[in-house]
Amino acid sequence: MENQNGLIFRRILTFLLAVMALSVTSCADAGTEAEAEELYSVKIESQPTTEPVKTPDLQPAVTPIQTPDNPSGRNQKAETYQMKDWEKAYSEYLESFEDKDSCTYCFIYVDDDSIPELEIWRGALDSLLLTYHDGILDEVDIYRSGLYYIERGNLVCNESGNMGAYYDYVYTIQDGRWKQIGCGEFREDYENRTEDYIGFLYEWDGKSVTEEEYEQRLQDIYPEELSMEPEGHYYIYKDISSLLKTGAVASADHYYELIEADMTWTEAEAACRKWGGYLATITSWEEFEQIQEQIIQEEKTDIAFWIGAMHSREKGSYGFNCLEPGMDLGYDMHKLSNALWHGFWWEKPPDGEPSYKGLTEAGEKVEEGFVMMRYSNDDDRYYYWDMPDDILAARPSFTGKIGYILEYDGWRELPGMDYVKEWGKAYLEYLDSYDDRDRAEYAFIYVDDDDIPELAVDSGWASNSRVLTFHDNKVNALETYRFTIRYVEKEGLLVNSGSHLWEGFEDFYALRDGQWEQIGSGMFHELDELGNEGLFFEWEEEKVTEEEYDQRVNSIFPVEKEKLPAYLYTFDELYSILSGK
Image (cartoon, rainbow, N blue to C red):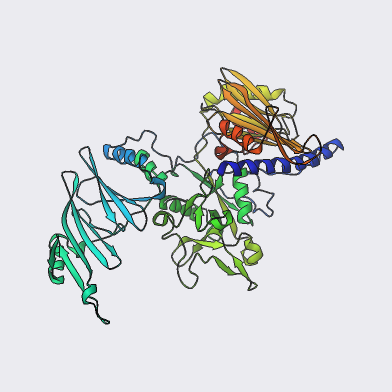
């Protein structure tokens, strides 16, 4: 379904772009230079926007050009992180764990060594608790998630129950393995219950005992006054995996742009994708605190920011989800509540977020299904609130106080200038003879997996655009139509799609050893040869069904991974970067 939705979206986009192209072309044919103005400005550094955005079509005003240097070196993962044996053991265990993506994870310290135990929380029914010692990894089931422990006291109590039956199972770690040292169970005494009283029957290690004896046996081996529940942060799988492998959460090397714009959530989400990033998806406390610190440092706490989370009824499901790129519904915030829900929402009365529904400032009822971060002066931090998509229509008092958070998966660091001179000079020499050099816009993208970026060139016309690559001291150019270029980063795949009148096309290319090789070509029409209306498909000039077309696309191009170039630079700005002047 995910791939199919992506293909449908791309076809719709292709035909919409055709209409836009026709209007631009008609202006050109009339001998004018009128065009639909597009202001591109993506800022990875945390610098304030010079002008708030007033309409969804205009982005923040032009900002300082990204330089080849990392601005601060912050948030970088350790490039040479050496995994410890216990980290390798936990990581390998989780990689083969069938339900890893539907669990949350937390480190605790049960015994007094330096290696933490790892809780795998599988929801309300049960957890697993892992321990590692001298090459041994062992696990114990914690039923109904009733995990209590004495920190560094080497004691765990699984205390829980259901439907009138309860238990206290006590464990310790001995020679790297879990050992049960106490088994207490008690249940309702149904045979002797009265209308006013229900008693319990108690057992310890399989033998009948009184309530007082039960409590004493438990206290003898597990001093409950020292007991605690896990208090550390819980993580989803991608973050616990990253912590084990790199010592940092997955977002540690991500960068965020705080953009002030009176936009709907839908407009903000589309703007982020246009710039080659995405509306910030917050999946850990570390990421939340990093973003919050940036907002405070930039003195923007008076702004309420849209983030990449929404009620999934908007996507035909239920509950709130964090919209991770490449995932149809993202992460279910309810099912992964330990990591994505608790503590993030404004839950104080009388508001009690999320409220799912609310009132406009005019007193009318409105659905609230899109997530926004708002600052609380009471405790100097941000919280999540659910809001209507068109917040200004519902609450005009928010005018001038809305923004969104644009997230990038890491700093796009260009190689050092000595190295840039080789491929940069080659790109500049190529552009010297390019007719539309001064009117074009430029973007660095990474199509293949080397360290040299490709250069996407948008001519501004319906034709004469380019994607340049440099290999073996030579530039190879792929001529494209300007409608849409999409690519799969570092996998050597690119598609150029567009349309004219009632026909759309998709040309697929692979970049191999510096050469562009066409690997597929598809077309779709709104009219067949007899003039019948519909949607008709061809692949390599052979008529196919829509399902066959989709299958051919998916076999060569993973739609769920595709990205759009973010055209940032004029030629003068590009020249400044590549020449070092």
